[in-house]
Image (cartoon, rainbow, N blue to C red; front, side):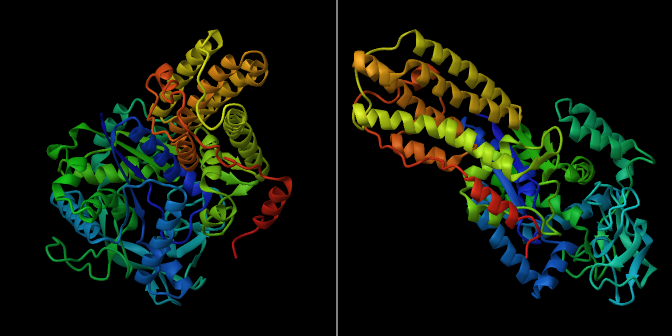
Length: 571
């Protein structure tokens, strides 16, 4: 048994997340966590809401609520939606927690003591109309790189280029829309990332098994142009982790908070501390996951995120941990994803475009969405959600393959032998061939899951379902029953035993359907380490129930209705 620490990129608090957010981090992270638990490993799976920075302030202002109240409310909403999609977090924390405040301030002090933080005067955009300095996300304008006209002052969500507010063309205040902006002098703290470039580059070079998408983005930031730049880690905001605090080695930073991208990744660690406190565990229990000198040296740490988050996780966050001089656990593997686009355009939280998590659960159960999104995950390139593809994936994979197999086997057995595993007959060459094929397919499925090759794992799982259908079609128990009932019993006995096998293998993808199958077959078989033994688990006489329809098909009328409903933005 190994120990696995898994974190998913923490979602912004500013509203319900869309399906692109879900498949880009949380959902594949859950898939991997569920698989590892099924294989008997010890797993700590953490996520949280990212509650600081301008997205929170702007969203709260739009909702007409104090920012703390808004964040607490939206954390509850996002927690409930995570449960709705069966995301099996061990803890779903908050970056506004006391644990994150203490740890962020602690690490900032350690970085300062190491000579990696310095105070700099800089010119920053000031809005005369709003009477305040505007942090990066409070400024919108046209991206100088790609021409996108809704780029933010920290990053263009269209081309992912990192920006400074002064880079924007035709900038305007995101608060008031005013273009009456001035550039004034102010003081901020900077993390001297450039001093750590060589150490970070050497560390990145060691990660030979990382996805090309991950390492290529990291190397681009390290070496393109003037190379890795120092980064301002404070902002002029009311909401966030205070920069001036008791014991701070600097002065004059009142009214400033730490930049959200400085404190948000630190929440991964703080989330573990929140988890320990919620469980009534001592600090040693979370430290054994995060401090290599306190037990985390044997932990395998995997992060999941969209490609726009890669620079902060490959460079800025490791710079914070390495630069602190303390024994923090660094990530072992970063699984990054491209974008899931929506019906010819982009999903967008800010613009309300696409299908959002609450909408999705209103339409269909979580398994339908989990299967389609994971089986089409944007791993090697951007992928696209269309209602036609979604309908086809659900109907052909879930209903026609897995659902069809379960229905045919259980209903035939009930009609000919009753609701118990039949006795009589024995395996022949078809069964031995099926077991060999299933064993080989299982090995391929496990290899894909171990490699976190999400789409390939889905393909291998579906291929296992197909084997059952092909066997049933070739063995034809309905024909055998007329001439040799014992032979038909042997066929059905194997096929019934295949259902709990499918339940265990499918659970990481479709956990609710897996639970339904376990309950119907009255089985708690566990992962099928030995396929032949697994297919003898349910003995003759073992009772079962014919499950209700496992998956229903999506009709053309439903597809057309949903397509029309979600053609525009959210109201």
